[in-house]
Length: 390
Ligand code: GLV
Ligand code: MG
Image 1: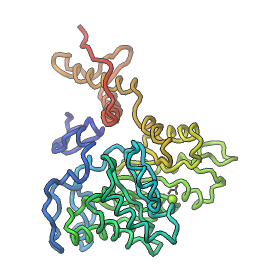
Image 2 (image 1 turned 30 degrees about the vertical axis):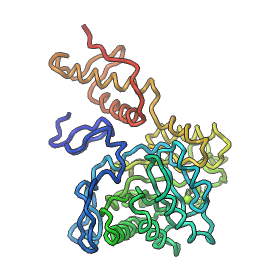
Image 3 (image 1 turned 135 degrees about the vertical axis):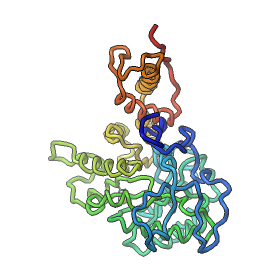
Image 4 (image 1 turned 90 degrees about the vertical axis):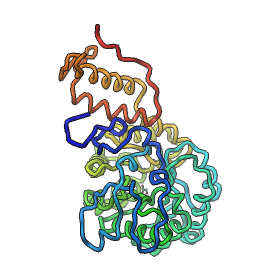
């Protein structure tokens, strides 16, 4: 508990939240359980689930605001997404198989993995898979086509009208500016009202895949309270900026440093400044397990929350790499216990103290909270115990 009025430091998510937030268990709460028994909303009533999104929507009093969404809790956006499995929406075998795989999130794709000729039939397959599949607690996302195509509005309408109650988020690809996110938010709001779904429950994941999107990422990340993640799309991005490589995720030959550093950091800053998760995109060489690990570790080291996986073999690696190691988790928990002890009266009410050979203070505690939160979310168990000094 820290000094800021009405705010508590949340161990589970490593950030301040309002005092109403309840902790680690919420990380595993399904979005549709966040508003139990929400009354059906009549068309035009505009009523919203009281336990929904924090209102970080900046424009007030305008027509647009009225058409958009209501407040929520930060934890809704912070469920673990270490592995985000791409599933082509037109492939019944993959739609079936994905249900039993241990990914944190699945996204059923209507965009680039679905050929134009079967885009329409894929919508219904996705609706059926959401309604009838057993997704075992995974975050269920559908990626629609981007706003420059003719498909977006019918993708959203068919999927949300047909399976809105079984859907957690809509992923919007190739986002170029904040208006595209706001347009999706308003469309979702209308469909939720029409269908009697709780307004604002369905989240948005925004993919940054071109130069315009990256230049506008701050505004994009603040565009809607529905936003949960900002996702880097390396394949489209490399094409958009004419990067000289065809191997997605690998460094372009001829450049001696990390060609992705600026892009990854830019997205991460925008995401963190708006309390969103940052997700790294695909690594296409699915037989190259070492290559996947290397690229995933790069994103995890910066602070990314997870990565797309395209093949079952990549899931375990992503879950491992985006969880803290057992050693780091134990260490973080020890720091938290030690801080609690030495700041207490019994421990001498100190601002800093030694833990073994290491000096720790409030800043150490903040770093430990992040690691401990991720470890608890990954259900790691402690293997050591803090003993107060004699
Ligand atoms: C994903 O959509 C990518 O373009 O990398
Ligand atoms: Mg793409």
